[in-house]
Structures are given as structure tokens and as C-alpha cells.
Length: 98
Image 1: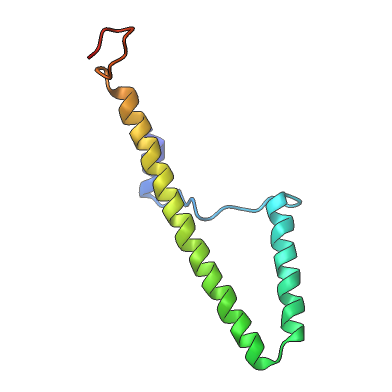
Image 2: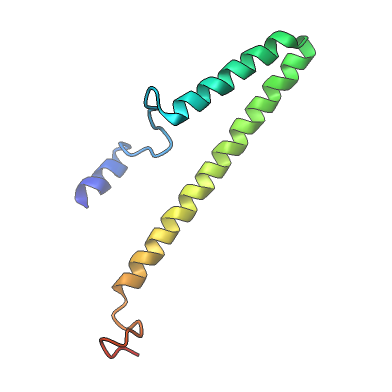
């Protein structure tokens, strides 16, 4: 555990920065999105391109907020599970707890 805490302190843990594995399902999906974006940009006039760029940036912001919230919710669930595991008096009938 000390290593994890040291890594956290020194900034070596960054859950939001992960490398995409070449050929992975995620990488293929990102490539499809990029291809569609490039095709749309080619079809739109300047005003349409600006609107598409704003849409993409807004979607990235929304995705980032959602990812952060999901990370926090998952972390909290993990802590609750650990806290419950540490409760010796949780009503388990096999141990006689009440």
C-alpha cells in the first residue's frame, strides 16, 4: 500500500490518462469517429464546421465530466465494500454477531 500512496503523492497515478492498445475495440471506435468527423468537416461550410467543432468540444467536456463522476462513484462503492468487510458485527449468523 505504501507504494500506491507514494505513487499518488508523486503524481504517478493518473487514471484519466490511459494508452489505447493498437487494434483494440476502443482504438477502432475512435478511428471510426475520426473518419466520420473528417467526412463531415469536408461536407460543411465554414459556419457548419465551427458548429461541428463546438459540438465535438462540448461532447468531450460532457464525456470528461461523466468519466470523473463514474470514477468517483466507483471509488466510493469500493470504499463502502471495504468498510463493510471490516465490520465484525454485521449480523452474520455464523459468528453470532448482532
